[in-house]
Length: 391
Image (cartoon, rainbow, N blue to C red):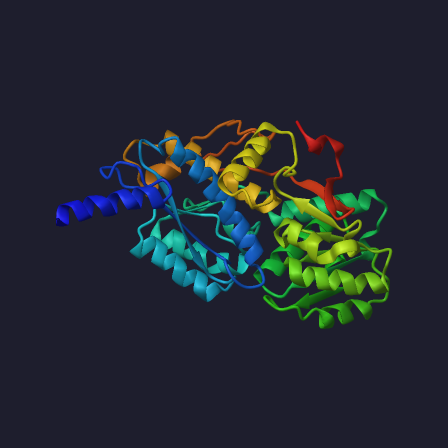
């Protein structure tokens, strides 16, 4: 009787649990993630998780890697460093995951990067462009997908100068933490590279992470001697939207520019009609592009999460998972934390269908350096460069 009951439970497990039909002789390849699944930045964490899981599901339906399914254990840190550190230790030590993928945020990276290095576990494709993940030479256990915040803000600065905006007509509104510092420092560096040595004295307002307290930062900009023609914003979508709405009533002709981490789709929704001409730099192609890799993303997202809409963040998670799988396929059958890193570093000129070949090496731990510029028109994101609509 007990034997029959056990068989019944096993069959029920296979029917109810996705991808549970793999042989018990081959345990899953376990991956971890600490991100914001709750709180004001949760749309970003949930989207990144959605993109990763979409590609993992696709691989599992094909039989996994050497018959082993891919499992993702995502833990909620609420975009708080203390929670992220605890989650990271749990994933690396207690759960013994093969690698960490898609962690979100710079404040959290300040604590998770040292843990990854200490525990000798790969932190791959983190959703941040901060320099703490981009040391020269690179940390062995930190491998990135996206362009850096320096590269994003450099693209912003170049674009503004080309449009005739002078350096002293630029101001900043940033989150008051390591994330805001990283974006601000990148923009200052870009301005100085153009010969403007007074960049550090430009107007700069700030707000506190996980709040909507933007008023003091706005007042700081109101005290500036000149009306800003452009404001670079380094924040998350809820606070950035509130700031832009207020600021547009004061400076209707000012241009507002956000870096990719803001969360483009929730930003556009929060702004509504106030989003007209607001710019956002992106680190992946437009999610409506006709590029084959992006078309695949939309097709698989519709299969595995039919209620979800495509966006830049889940596309980034999808691409990160796709590159990770490419590394897994290059690794020996007995995959370890160390030989997975070696396998990823061996990737050269990999075409994943996004118009940019993917390459890594022991000295190069960032796949993408390109920045795609977009702006909001009719509450939709459109590329500033028409070539970015497809291949």
